[in-house]
Image 1 (cartoon, rainbow, N blue to C red):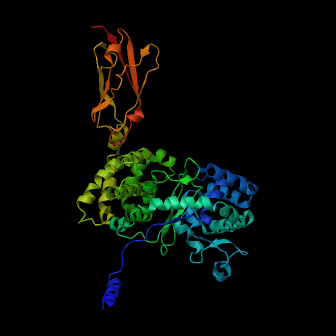
Image 2: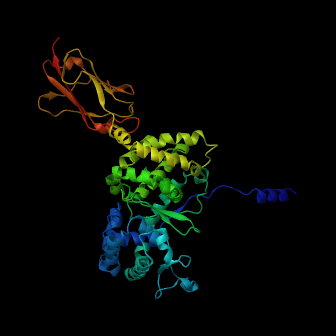
Image 3: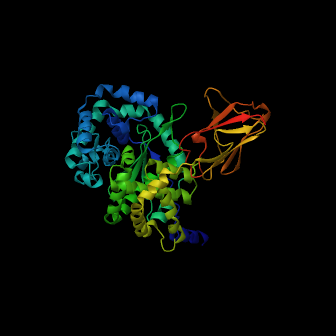
Amino acid sequence: MKNILFIFIVFFFPCTVEAQLKSSTSEIFELSSIVFRMAGAEEYMQCPLTSYANDIDRYFAPYADHELIGYIREIREKHLIGYDAVANAAAQLVLLGSVMEKTPDAIRLHNPRITISPTFAPSRISELDERWTEEVYEKYVDLLDDFYRESKFDKFYADHRKLYQIAVKRMDEMLVDMNPKWFGSFFGEDLGDVRIVVSLCNGNCNYAFSLTRESGFGIVIGCRADSKGRPTYSPLTPHTLIHELSHDFTNRLIDGIWDEIEPAALKIYPHVEERMLENAIGSPKNVMTEWLTDLCADMYFRENTEIKGMSSEFMVALQQNRGFIWMERSVDFMEGFYENRASYPTIRKYMPQIARFIHETAEDFEQVIAEFDNRNPRVVETFPRQQDTVVLDTDRIVIKFSEPMSTNSYGYKWSDEEGVLPIPIPKGDKEYWQDDRTFVLPIKKRELQPNRKYGLILNRFFFTSKREYPMAEEFTLYFNTIEQ
């Protein structure tokens, strides 16, 4: 009876624990990145693994004149194909092996190894990425397959399997700490069976890619090198993961309000266009999508653990410096979402308010710019004052800042200007923060010499505000001495 009852409970109350996120490498994705590297696509030439990059260049040098490489250069120029368009193309391809004869519908070429998945119609490629056309895509796949077979890419891939395994192992160790349930609670839709591909060739570049709506989406994540030249990841990679995993949701959310917010986006874009283009964000709609995706990722880390060694303030400062100069305002605006969660159970329900926020931001963008231009802390008062003359019993320097500062760091150096002496510091006595706006530097007053000039220079990067902005420039303090 107990056994029957147990079975009944398990059957009617199934386990709801979400599957752990896992990563993998992919021959097709790695091949795609490598051929775009060979074609000179700068976003695919950032491989930080020196030995691996050298292996790529050496192994594939005999195939540099393959028709595929010239064709990639052509479609980059004519159709702007690069960045995530490469991942979107790769996601629809399958690598055929011993099961080739079992899937005859997939075979379009002469005994291909790489072909378009039988579940995907090539005519749909422009629906997923408007840079591709059916004709361009099919020719690209034909040439990619020919390159794969001619270069014996499977041998290159097999020769580097141990390196790929390290990349996957280290990514999976990071994914253990991810909370996939958050996507359901925040977006109102489960993350589903997402595909996470690690690419060694991609360097710092990461992309979300589309599959058919029936089969979900995925992301491709690049890596960096450790001290031994093996693949590892940046401290910022957890935020990147959440950002890329959120893209499928945020793309659709922006699509849903685009007609309403387009006029506001067109007002904002000229102010940030130059910086956005540096980050390959090339249209007002892309700006809005990337902004919302970053904002949602920030909310993940508000609700979950912060990135080790990286505060939420640091991430917002980083995003503002990338060009989203209204991100601080955006994070403050999201308080309304959390304070009224009963009315807004998911971010989708909050989108009308977000649309209103975008319009208000566009109307007030001159003030947004002014706030950004004044984001850096500055020295507002010192003792001694600049170029002041002090008596020899002065025992400290006091420096006050314009806003609350991070008290975890400081850094300064002595002026190398001729005739300027370093300030004598008491042995064993340390500099300290009196409060979060006041930095104090003790002076060994008995070693001060009369009628001399002393000076120090504050390192701008070691004096940062609690909002994680450094001083805009170094600050130099000079003072003169006189006998009492």
